[in-house]
Image (cartoon, rainbow, N blue to C red; front, side, top):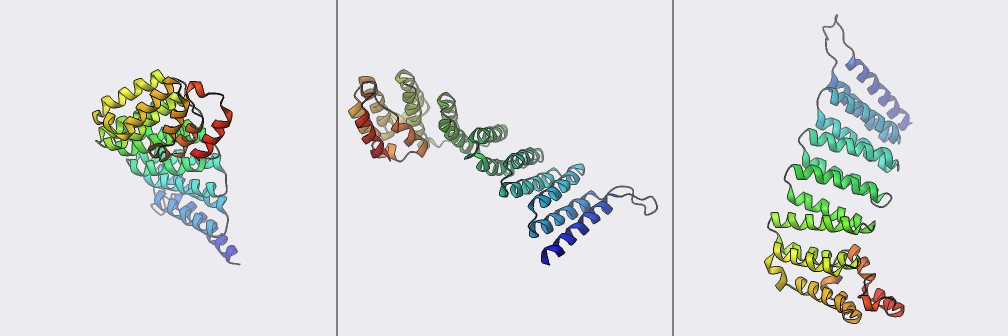
Length: 297
């Protein structure tokens, strides 16, 4: 019974929205009441949602978004689309939800609300990162381009971290190196050099995963150029040890360094990457490799 009453109210709200859109010379109503129509559709959406009809609720919100957009209320249009996207996300209609999240991001940006746009980027990417990491990556890249235009370095570094994580998951090591360097530059820009340490190690690890100790050495030098104190830090010494033992083909010492506390505290993507690493002379030592993987877990 309760649901029937809610559905009846939703229909009444839709009828009210239609009335708001009508014009009448007799009543001297020369323009449609776009805000009134949008508000009525948002109320209809609440009724449908409470009646356990999420798809109809999303449809009402999208109609309301159209009215807001016609009235150039871009923020409210974006908010309505975001709300519709969240309803579709909850019923696992991810493709349509992502399209709406993207339109909401653009709408927030157009209205000048870049912080809200950035939060919506995170919501949208969170929907996808397990089921479709490639699409999540594109959304983070979209968010990055937005915040870079507005000189929001901290927000950009947050997106870059997620971009790197997804690129590592996808095995896109060259692209991951690019986003790690971009993140370093952002931290240099906002003078948070202590946060550069693990990114320096990350550059070395990814280069060694690609079998390129020369590039690892070059990127280590680049980090030192960005932060002159890096060479004297524990992170810097770990980088030097990794490169030296790798180039010497001393896998026993190389694996010992991989087990040090500094490396164990890194993000899971790097821990997984480390399980695959061996100094060249150690490749093929299967039994030891299995033990090392257990130690790194």
